[in-house]
Amino acid sequence: MKTLAQQVITPEDLLKHWQGHRALTRRVIESFPEKDFFEFSIGGMRPFAKLIDELLAIGAPALKGIVNREIQPYNEERAEKLIFKAQYLEKWDEATAEINQHWEKLTIEDFNETFNLFGQYEFPIIHNILYFIDNEVHHRGQGYVYLRALGITPPFFWER
Image 1 (cartoon, rainbow, N blue to C red):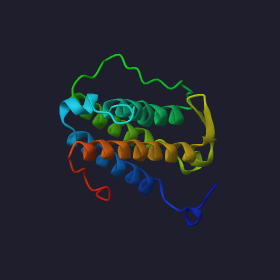
Image 2: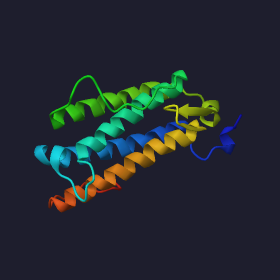
Image 3: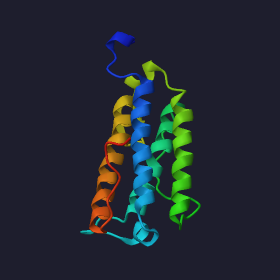
């Protein structure tokens, strides 16, 4: 068991860091013109809506799986097809609230336990959570490239 003195970051500060990234990604979604959110692509990369589908399939569902110790396969498909950017923003906000709810159920000891994320990635839970954040930053960077190619100045990355 780790003591507070051995921690580099508290669970509360890690959640705040992640939610800062989520707030910034939300502003990137908002910055896209409706049509371009679903259609614009460079060099064969997926449109930003598809990247957000991936992020929505990871954050809240994966954290729920971790908390409940339920190994569920990765699945980007949802029953309801989202066709408007506003729907994505609504789902993003719902996922953010779910992340907050699931986070409260984690103990400090949980972070060092191994979990087989999506039945594919067996790592300590802290590594899975850092992956969620890294993956979001990576895809948000793609969104920044798209926005700049569209002549739109993206939100400042440091304003989280």
